[in-house]
Structure formats: C-alpha cells, structure tokens
Length: 168
Image (cartoon, rainbow, N blue to C red; front, side, top):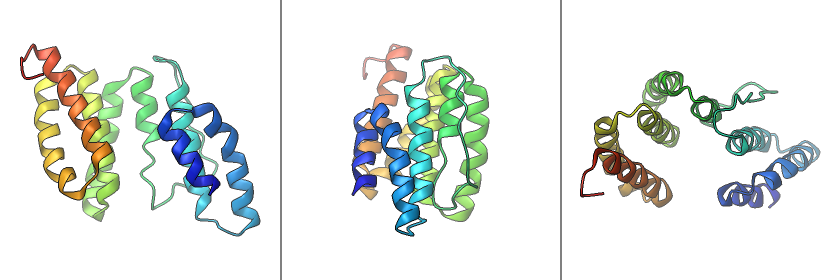
C-alpha cells in the first residue's frame, strides 16, 4: 500500500513526500522479503530528485543497485534534460529506444519516446516533434494510456505554438 500511495504522490508532484517515503518502502520490502519493490522505490527516488531540482542544475541520479530489467530508468535522461543538455538526452533516448524495441518492451519504449519528444522540443526541432507525436499517439491511444497521450498532445501543442501554427 505504501508503494502505491508513494506512486500517487509522485504523480501528484509531491516529491518531498516521495523522498521521505522511499526509505520506508525499502525497509519494508527487505523486512517482508519483497525484493521486487526495491527497484521501484529506487526509480521513484531518482525521478523525485530530478523533478524537484531547479532547471539548469546538474542532478546526480543515485544507483545503489544494478538497473532492473523491468523498469525503464528514465531518470537519467530526465536529469540531462533538466541540466539543459538536450543533445545528450536525445542520444541516450535513441540508445534506449533501439534496445527496448528489440526486446519488445512496449511500456519502456513509449516512455523513452516521450522523453525523446521533450528533447526535440528543447532543441527547437518542432516539425520533428509533431511527426513523432503523431506516430506515438497512433500506438499509445489504442492501448488506453490516456495520461501519456495527454502529455504527448501537450508537447504537440507546444511545438505548434512555437511554429505559429493556428491549429495549436
């Protein structure tokens, strides 16, 4: 339950609470012998550290354990975008996208596609953003991933506004 509530806090943007809750999740997971929870807690902590950092700041994403084969580990790319290095973020996205496509990891693939779109926005490649969003929406909407679809649409609107397109 605590892990689920902490995911909710992360989604609601309460990153201080996420950072306070993660040690308890890890302790409980070890005590209850639920080792599957630990990488999820690590990912929550890394994402909260990145999201709560000021724009333009360098964020070190801690990794006490080896990366999980089940999680996307998108905090590294998000940290690069937060630090104002969209080129590095885009390169990292491309590397992960190829890997996740080859492994058939659909959820991780589309998470990194969203990050790629954010990197393209930061690089002012607005036409590329629009075409990537269209491709992503055609795959994500049938899966019923509404939250991701909304974020993708928001990226498209931002790109169209920057292009001066009246469809925005």
